[in-house]
Length: 160
Length: 160
Image (cartoon, each protein chain N blue to C red):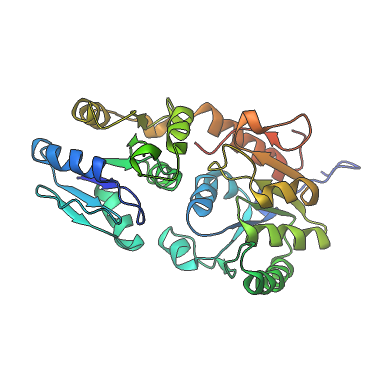
């Protein structure tokens, strides 16, 4: 029975869009997979062939981009909202990089709850998208305790 | 089988040379991804680049990875549940731009399945120790448990 004022949704009904570029960002998402798969998780990546190799079928494809690729970034900024609207996730999270950030931005427009987990590779300072996510995502986490502040980014552990 | 990798880009001949010398004593095949190194191996199979699908298949059969301290390889080892032994590149020898791989091994030391060293000395003993590791894959590090728990709480809309 549903109690007044409480949202009771079974975990496997919570739709999650998990986004990562190919390479180390994707590896980190895969390490989080055992937890993600408790939910209705959908994946998006820049290298769907690698996703398939890892047993993830039907991953959405995002164009790769970074701050030095303005045209690709513009294309990615258009594709990201399409993917977000197609799946209408309640939660969007990314372990990086720029394509994941665009999905988080698009997620804000449809009211999704958004989380940026900065790459474990960034032990000296947050990535550029990580810094932007302090402002644009609901939560921004670093995987290094010494980079965490009282507000943002927060530290809640690491993939390793 | 033991896989040696220094990534697909920069060479790291110091590690390749040390592993080539050791290969005949290890009692199992050794295959190396050498990047753009120039050292010619005599005792182990070496290739500049191994395509990701083949690398993945080789990993399935591997008992150990010996690697430069690249975070991408560390993450791949974690996903494939293989022990990894790391040797950091030295900036002063031109093996990388700087000594950031030393910072990386300091931070990674002590996590399950990850063995670190400062240089190529003592490789033989440490490879034996790494091959003797048992059942470590069942252990999720405290920091990884913390991240999985926090992620579940975020997705379910519970407080952190």
